Image 1 (spheres, rainbow over the protein chains, first blue to last red):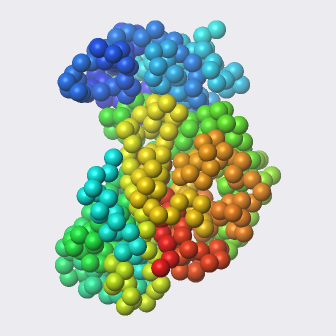
Image 2 (cartoon, rainbow over the protein chains, first blue to last red; image 1 turned 180 degrees about the horizontal axis):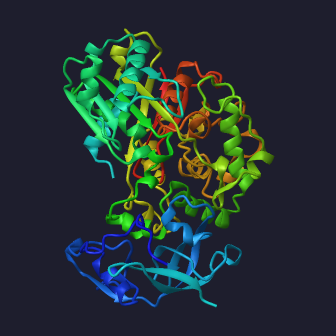
Image 3 (cartoon, rainbow over the protein chains, first blue to last red; image 1 turned 90 degrees about the vertical axis):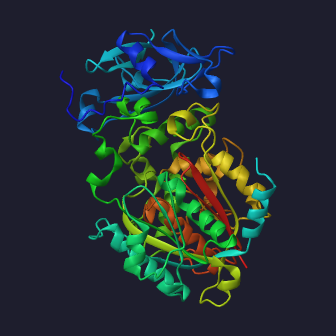
Length: 136
Length: 392
């Protein structure tokens, strides 16, 4: 299915988040941590943050549902094909909570703490989104 | 957090600055005029209420979200010379911040008579922020908007749903908030929802907007223009109205003042938590001293979380707190006595400030008998603000 012309695509060349979007294109979920402490930051910090002791690493791509909401009506035409649109806050195994949406899942299958895994959805040459499916 | 100088300033503000005039145009779905005109009319009403003239105004403080300019408004109003002006961002988080900045300007001598105002045309569907996502999404929004998490109802729904999961907050609890606001609106001739009663059955059977939130969990979409006039208490003595004293006031962003980052605080804490800490630290009055509360209500769960965050009950107890009519007129802590954003008008919470002033004056249409103090809060999902108003 072709992408709706009004789809709100993200900027992917912002230096703060570029490694994340570059990773998505290669089907890798990249997160940022402090080199010394291992503390994972989300949303990511700029490279100059507190002296720049940050590094990107590939996450496992596994997590669980921390919260979710379900849209049943198309408020934006760009998201019509996703209805019912299960927007999810995934607490990934590395700690942070990432916003995403569910695929291969019905609203009645959703639950708090449900295990999910990342899948990658290509939108354009530039943009691939990490989305989530039940880790059955 | 607050140093000596900071505390001094807030001590100089405490009960020394007052809101002395209020005014607003009739709320509407389509007000039919641009906000640079409606703002002027609302300010004229507020000046008239205070017994002041445009020539008395030397300061102006407003929200920034749409493109309006102080000098345009001041010129149309007939202000001779603004000596000081200020804009605060972050939508509904900024409501009380306008008063805080005005108060700081007044006690430091930057201005004597400050207009704070909010005019917004939001009734038309095309005016909604999410109908305008066209450009490349940048900064923090790029980490949630591309997945469709755009509408405030969905952003807040994430918080609400987790709150329901963690604490057993029910739809009936949310309904108590909607029904309290609607009941109060029945007494308010200006309320958009006057004449449209709401019972629990209707509340529960309403259509879903963004599960778990339904129609009556959501605020209205309204065109409106509101203003208030802030000056020193000394000056207020010569004016027409009983002053509403600014007792304590605070702004707070917290460490992570965007939705996404707030989602990443340990318990999905909102910005109201640090704001409440600052506010009560600066206040001689405490939550138990509030006779009513105007808690920002873009969505019903924000009121339940606000009751917790501002210390009326413990975290997780906000749902049960709403039971038994406690938050209705006649209850222990009436909230949203004008109907609020849910049932009076949604104008980024500025109507909550006006209602706080009316409660202190004793002129609310849902007047709490002998109201001595009230809390007014801004939106808790973004960088926020709050204040305590008290009677002299």
